[in-house]
Length: 477
Image 1 (cartoon, rainbow, N blue to C red):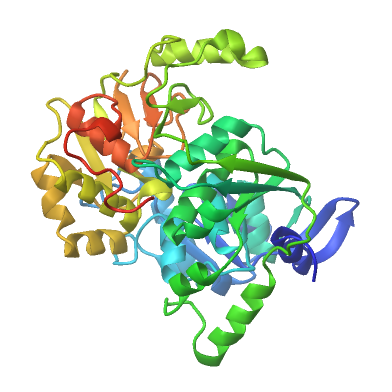
Image 2: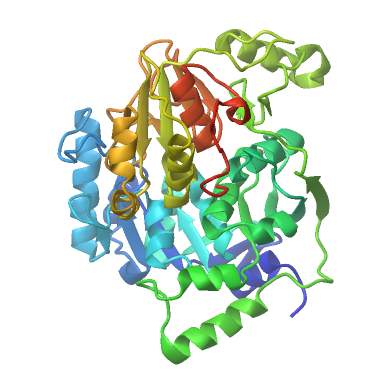
């Protein structure tokens, strides 16, 4: 069957044509959380409807959960009510729930791949923007709103338009100190925060082929920050090796049949894409954002750009620079920080912590005085694996807080928040005003290793120039 992976998967899931470009499509896996599901369940109950396929619905409480060691403590009554409602609704509908009190707790976009729920060729929906993460496995995965969460609960399907597909071929060897997060920020910088509107992004090329699954998840996670509805990578041996043996993965003859099916959904060499872009990352350096949108970024060794050259975006650039305290022509490096955050569904996986550990072991420095440095694993499975490698001791000896799993400081919906005009070096995905809990807080996005370097230096710094460090020692993620 000719075509792109997106075409193949979308077309195979069409239930019926609703109108000229509106299609009802079947959803294989529906992931729900405590923030976007309560109203959806309430609407469902008011209409006298039930959950159509609880066995295809999986729940995590991640946004509102405390990472301070006691998941029963909440920042406010709303957070507590949301988590209680999720537990009640999943229990009433027999929906599998990765309970915060149990070992499989974590961020939904970390837990689902760990458990093998995310498999090539699926359509996956979740009431969370960064559902695009699952596209790393060759899925069509997208975030949905509360009313759509209700619709999927009721029918295991969605009505949506078919997207255009942009092929983004990423080529070149990553330089010293450059990680998948830097590649993602570079692509968004080049194509813009709205450049992907109406598109699915297909990531391919020699760089992506060499990426691990966790690196691919980082890349696809950030696709929505470039305006794309979803991003994906064609499944290959790396994908299959990651999935084999996981809890929800097929076994025996079913596994062999699944691999053959997954191989067939990859984009054909003669497929037609709506747009094609080649991105050479061989000369890309560690990236850092300077503004209040993920596309407002620059290599850490280059100055903040002149807004006079931003065209229609000049006014927005000037406002962002004023808020962030940036000066055109001056470097971002040297900006003092109050908080360092390593975690989120973008960079809270084991390979991220491995890279940070390798960096720390190459230097004897500790977290700078006055800086609060937090490492928040994306799941308890990551936390357990990190502890088995001795990372817990290493991180704590160097002044980092190793916390329980959750969204934490990424979203500011729990007790982990910036206070007042604090400055945060963050490995998360968004730097919008107020994103980390304070309307005056300032967020600088970068890779986990860059965050670690900033924590030790007390300011944003080029990890490549850090004394004695080996910033690629733990892998690229």
